[in-house]
Length: 429
Image (cartoon, rainbow, N blue to C red; front, top):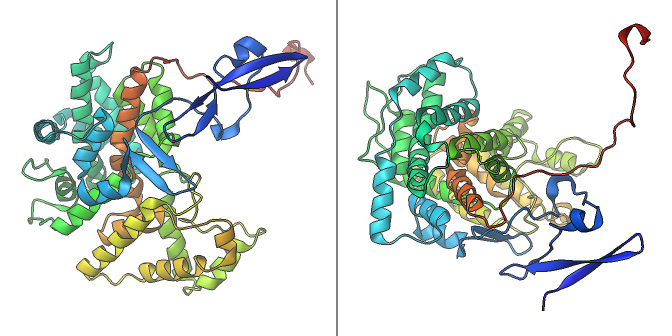
């Protein structure tokens, strides 16, 4: 029997169905609310609104659970690779050996970009933010592959998926090379996904760059941890743009811009900047903890708490171990790491942070790892974007096949002036 709830409005009673997810989460189906009652809901930020029914990612913020297609993030971080996880998210299942080989082959052999794309980089200022460059170039891919723009079939969509996953690290590395005035290198198909990216970032024609396998593995795990996270701002943006039947390149380009914001993909950069500010002020951790607790002080501790998680972010436990592995392996003496550890220790024992459930999140340590790998701060959100790309693609694909597909069109409550008459210019005061 279908559950319902009742709404009483102007003396009339209306029943709305309740739908239930796999893990018992429930939602009131308001898709016919306006048609039957004339009412709409008001939900700033859509914090209580489900925009879709998805089979891709499940998270439980109270229990600290994150699943990709039902598989715990802890298992994927330990046992999988980023390319395999990308396949899982996009196609809905772990690949067979032959499926994995085919997918990996196409990703490797689509990594080069059209030579004309390099001309784009000549037109950007040297100090252009890499996220702006990446979004612009990804959007421009639609001009190079126009045959896949109008009602593409499944095979054309698959080729587009291969191209995006393969070319995005190349596009990202080029944005960095442009900023430091170095030549744009070609990809190396003999390397795996993360090794290839690191090689393009740090190699130059004058000397060979050896990619540390441990470093490549750590980066691979970081990408897995960022691969999807349900209906976040950037994913919702990709879905909203895609709901107009816009092509995948342009939808992802919009997602990159959404991710760029400091409240989303810029959070790990903000952590580094916060730690640097504390260090510059003599490393007075307790001073800044007290500032964070003062409601009248605008200072906030970055990297603590999460919009969804009300317990430990499961990714933060994994990434904390990675941080220690990287610093031990590379022998890096990083003052900011010591500050981060001290800050975490204080916060996890302080009643204020415990009562508000402000636990370290994935951004708290990811920036420190990127810094240890010599990845510049303005590339941090780009690293996030490389990781999140499979999730964006998976949601775009799922949307296109949704039986309840509709173009996104939120409603509003109008608060502007009532009807006014036009006043001619000569009569205005």
